[in-house]
Image 1 (tube, rainbow, N blue to C red):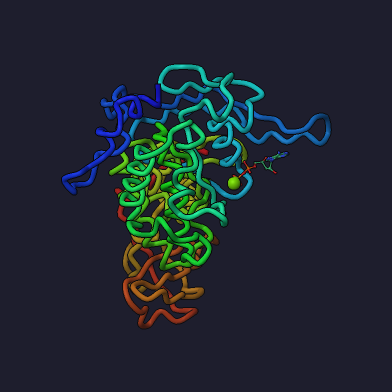
Image 2: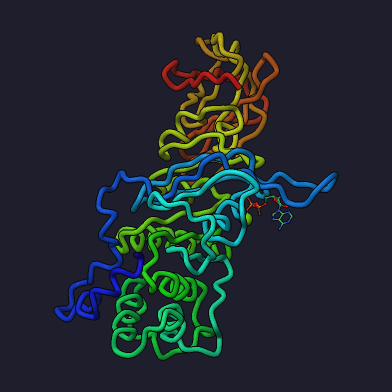
Length: 362
Ligand code: ADP
Ligand code: MG
């Protein structure tokens, strides 16, 4: 079924008038809110007995069609295991995975309408860029002008027109990553899985590639599932984020939800928020979270949480200020620009607007 675009014939994939071809929009997936992937009660145990590792623990997720979905969490929390399971390289110990309503667990990887891109681009060094991109198509038995047209369209999608005849090795890391993306998208998967695809790139390139990834997802019109441990990457790319820890999904929501309305202490802290005792901010809940950008530092004397500056860290556009509260807790406040007068030991008051406080039960 996922080869249906191919069945339409070469005319459907060419764009002879020079406008970008609408690439890879599977006909059955026109409703944006439709669930493409449904992961239900999935657990995975590696090994047996005393050496057993529970990599996934009762994970349930719904991933919408044509969306950018991100699995975010620290190293070892089970992100890659879940991604590999969707691709078919791992099998759950328990639970089901459905794609477009159909249980896919019995399907081997090559029968799933899914492709995967890794941090290591894994390009074939002895093949040209075009042959790399054509690889999946040729494995499906396609040949000739149809493949050439599709390769052209994919290279245009990743902005590597004219690179087809080159070998991948001399290309930059970002260009190689784009070849890998073109290769993965060429056979027309419904779902592209990306496992830390940007972590091998330096900071500037990583930021450029974020913009590119987002554009490519939009133009390809298919579902991307990204795995990352980078909060900023997740926030900047995703329509929806699932935060994982120790094999469990702790919270699923929009970037705004995850950042501004964390569901528990771990998510609040992992996203860079302050976690305090609820009582410190006058709440009945056991814990409370406040974003550093919502903490207003004022001179001693007014209402708020009194304390002293422990240290400041200059970050260019902002400075973070670590304050030791008189009650014994610490809180980080963002100050825009340089933090004049906030030398260590200085007495301050942290003003926190009530609307910026998130009550946490766990
Ligand atoms: P992440 O991608 O979030 O860093 P992984 O999914 O790679 O995490 O790993 C989750 C846990 O499962 C880790 O404790 C890891 O050591 C373990 N694990 C992953 N794959 C295997 C395997 N093939 N055999 C044994 N343990 C594994
Ligand atoms: Mg991983």
